[in-house]
Image (cartoon, rainbow, N blue to C red; front, side, top):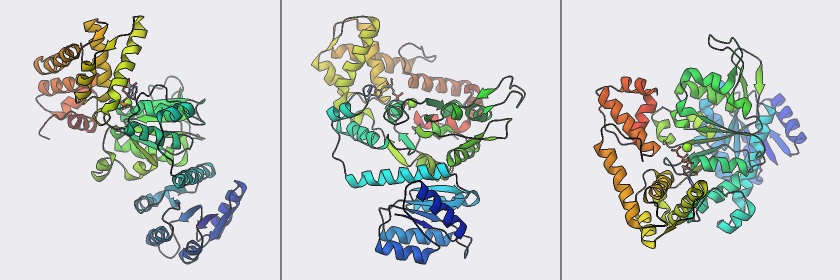
Length: 457
Ligand SMILES: Nc1ncnc2c1ncn2[C@@H]1O[C@H](COP(=O)(O)OP(=O)(O)OP(=O)(O)O)[C@@H](O)[C@H]1O
Ligand SMILES: [Mg+2]
């Protein structure tokens, strides 16, 4: 049974009708008192709760009710309904343990999707699955590009296999190079949307002015440079999955626009006021700490909850050292295959050595190290010393050379060197540095933090 709580009789009857038609068993009550009476004696599958009751306009009553319901039924998912104007109320509700929020007037499809997702996820929780093992994982799912069988990785794959079939929005966190993009693809590939598009957008590289036409598309003539119609990423991703990469780098003004689309799954193409509906699953990734950014008010809390029904955290490579030999062999084999060369082997000292490195650049760094060492040494059996000299080479070249030689640097090292160089050129003036690099100040700050570059702000 789904419990509907709303003081408006018209809302109760239309929700009841909608849910019945969708195959659920709704039961509607007008207020907190009746609702508490219900949750005391039965356990609904889900609760759909209005936040604004007529008596008060602050929504205080709604939050109170939510907290009380949570005491009686801590495991029942609650979906809040609130007007756009009082979305901050939904945020408070999420903090108090609501599962999701929907804005009024609601979009039937969005609401039903949220309800189904909530029920699917809460049923899975009850099943308490045993940890996934690699063999089962490979038999049941498509994880072929994801190498490893360490406990931390298997936990990630376990979560992915449970949530992939749902429509839940997923936030993937983890340091640079830990495989966030790979996991985003795996969520799509293992979902019912697998045959539909997977559209990747790098929000980190998007300036504010580009954001709208990139995401929503534009009609010819919508603005000066709009010479032809352009299809936005949301439209391209229709029925499939949209992957919002580096979402922590999105400017605040764009965040509210993104929230609107995700909330209603409708948007307007620039120069065309006809709203368009889309059906998309949202997967986001970041190596920023969004919780901290929410506390600092550089990331909207409502958007944070919207993209984050599920969080998948990817452990750093140093937390899954057991996987290093497997990964090293995998990258070596792929490289040999690509160049049509015979496979190389690793001495056991070499594998030991590889397991001891710190890998600030995680799997990407390991991959680069293996590939570079193979190229430079040209040997059939790689020894610890071969890797050692490659490591020395990078640390030295990164430290000594003022102008970095591109050779042998990972993308991250290259980025760091470029920033250091720009800081020098512009005598530490951050606005100038940001302009010179073509990124926002916020994006620059985050990179300074990421690479531990000290500056006086
Ligand atoms: N478990 C894994 N097995 C095989 N390859 C992996 C694995 N994890 C990551 N990789 C590889 O490592 C590289 C980095 O992965 P990916 O681009 O997904 O990282 P990321 O977390 O998105 O990094 P960033 O934050 O810098 O964007 C890619 O070449 C990817 O294929
Ligand atoms: Mg990435």
